[in-house]
Image (cartoon, rainbow, N blue to C red; front, side):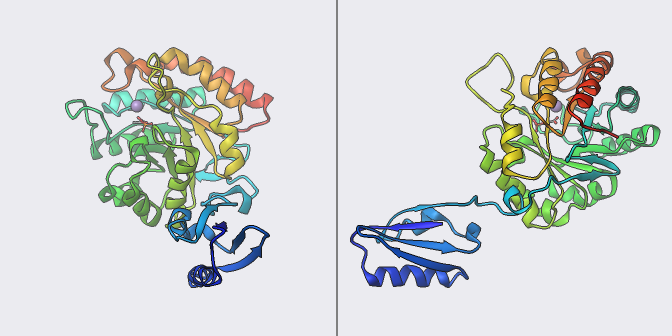
Length: 339
Ligand code: PEP
Ligand code: MN
């Protein structure tokens, strides 16, 4: 971090600032220019807030020369992280194919969908148990009953299960029953939840991007989980809010190369929540694989017209199956593998 001082800054100002910075365990190096003096801060500057230093009357402005995140930063961890979800590897050339209904609705539904997505090549089963719905009058999910139904589907198909955690009080239950814990878009900046997830969740975490989160805000959310103890984070782009209203959200494919450059964490794409329309899912899923993502999360329902949530964006099992045929071919072309 570089602190540029005002021309009016005196020796006593430089001493005050360097003392203040050094008290926090960092080193300083002062460069006296002809017009201006700058203080270089050396060490782990992630603990500093440039805006707070700018409050000092002797400071003109402060610039970061490195990112505010450390654990998620590729600069400190050049190789791709590979996350193991109950035996399924994601990242570093291994693709995760998460599929299943938006919500678990009944035993028959989840088992039927689980069997069909498994036959098509999915390696993780999804199904919402606790649903973050915009309206309090909409179906809120079957709750913990759904976790048991997911476990039944796991018994039949041997697919690990992924479902969303909204309330930290359920962490012990999720640690027992769930293989990949999803943090939804609405909770990406719920820092109290992120801290508890970091400390208490013993399973890998799928962190969805907030609807209007910048890359840095999203990575900082991952950093919260990692800094609190859980390093197994997978990022998931699921569309961001733009001025376009034709689609539910806008899929940000650029997130793939950008996040690959900035972090070592795997990134998967959820084209279902991005477009909000089932027919947008296959083209966007294929584009995502071509752009280098580490996997896909796709909503599949055996009877989308009657789905209790997200029917319009859910693929029928046959459509998912034919998409997966294309995805497998693309995976071979791009040298990726999947279990
Ligand atoms: C979901 O996966 O069903 C979901 C609610 O996702 P998001 O948090 O991306 O809206
Ligand atoms: Mn959904």
